[in-house]
Image (cartoon, rainbow, N blue to C red; front, side):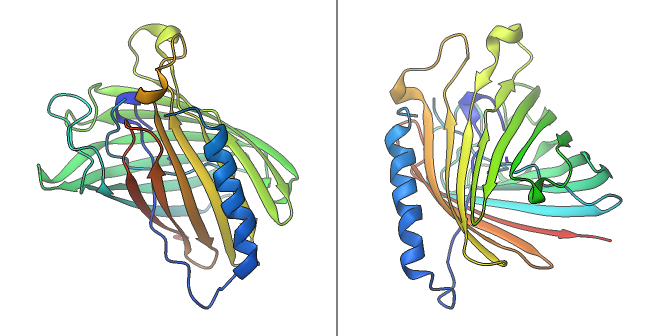
Length: 281
């Protein structure tokens, strides 16, 4: 995701069913407290549009010479009933996502392509929403570092129904700490519609706090926001603001899922996500 578009159609994500066999019990309580804390510090969060990627980047990349495929799938069972712009896809009851192809070009560089991005809606049926190119620069072996960092650059070509701007881009700094068994990650995202110069950049930060139950499972609290143009942030009631409960399962095929709840009138009330990722060679 993350997983992003301009504030009028910010991208977020989710789907969760923690297996009964996991039964972390009391270990979940710190995550509940963290979710409440994140919500409490959140500024109250512009009509939200559908999302193709809902993800906090942790500076992890495909291994050198490896191809990787991630399938993003999101569903909004209770979202905005009107489009974020005239003719745009309505997020309510929409399935949205994309195929993310990645290649480990260097120990510090991953090349990515999102193709196709898709939606399935009552409004338009199945649609192809465009594509994105990605350059992800990171500190090598981020998983093994206590402090890690990186920067992601995305360049999007958008279908008219997906975004009011044909071209857009994302600048996503990545800052985080692995304090075993906890992860603390912040993505202060800047989105650019290529109209209005630097003053038109939009600030859409995301954050994640995760607890690793064991080597295969992690539970997390995430937050995704759309605060509006940097030069003049939106009033609280017009900002997009969602708090998420999420899980990760690490195996030959990694799985990430979650459920997000809107905290403001401008936010989709409930969003679900499910992601599958594995190396192809």
